[in-house]
Image (cartoon, rainbow, N blue to C red; front, side, top):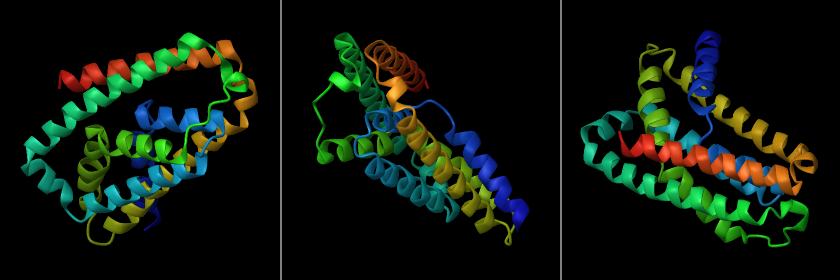
Length: 199
């Protein structure tokens, strides 16, 4: 059981630890110290739900409906490009967090988090299809320990980057550093959008 649990955690980390739109948002909210708990709760619960769905066989259904992933793919491309544009627009001001008095509403942050989570086809491929298939290859006694391990991987990763960014926010909040962060986020998101568009 412990072996399956550790294997699930390592597999979860390997798929989740990547600079994507969801992780970029968590980092951003951590640095801003703005609605971080809400963002982390949504990201963690969404991953837990999707990993469980993959384990009970939803991944196989998704593979049988490629049109659904195709729709999600193009929605994801559009949203990634929009988020990249918003990051570049933010970088132009180079105001830094201390000078940025504009606080986004909880509703706006929740909407953005849900969109970046559920409009990203990569989330479904990683959590539902990949982790779901890996879990079901563990044998009857290893399916749920592996699944729980993958959930623990998601939980620990999001908490680390969210509260890690929050702890370092005083150092990362200077105008020039924040501008660089915004530009890097935009570049990564454009690359992800192109990879997604090109299949």
